[in-house]
Length: 301
Image (tube, rainbow, N blue to C red):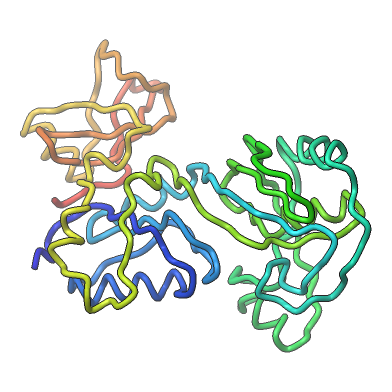
């Protein structure tokens, strides 16, 4: 058992269990008190589910904003109340558009846009989760949110199924993207299958599979897949420090900088490292007091 270790374990979530169920299983196996995940996957969805252990839970604000990449299969010509294959069919047998129209319409979704979250979701609204209203048949008007689709690539078109790869910002629902695509095409659509390929720096190549029976998984096997804290923020510039300065930064003290090329601009985050240990995430400040390093979050590892 190594309950004091800190870092991220990337799990390839299977279809069936909820994201919380995976967290609960790993918490029990590793006997760690602090554990969380970087973005919920619906029970029917599979793929990358990064789990933050111990001090790594402090990384959440710096990782949740990172883009996510999915492979989605959409069924055209039908609709469900949940916008996915787990829901009740509400419309079907609509005529399908041509392959050319589908490809052209998909391309229009790239960029910034407003998206209304699905009613069957865990999003909080007026003190309750949306799915609680939906299950009681209560109609609520959910405000749309601005999201960004960075890339959307058609991979397969075998009507009535369309498979594409999409990279999107935080807050984007692929179920809703499927439903919006069906609306634009005039035939309706729902999400049939979903695989998450990447969450920020964490990819499917790093992910480990959980056995069908959790009791077959050994804690030692899980710990072998632990990504250390210092390797969990590869998108941030790194500032190496000596022991004395590192101790000051860990305590939250602001340090003046003079002439260092940090690879970051004022207002941007960077990670402070001593040897192979993540000391803090800090922000570069440049004001009347000069250029300095202001710690945002310290790590005790």
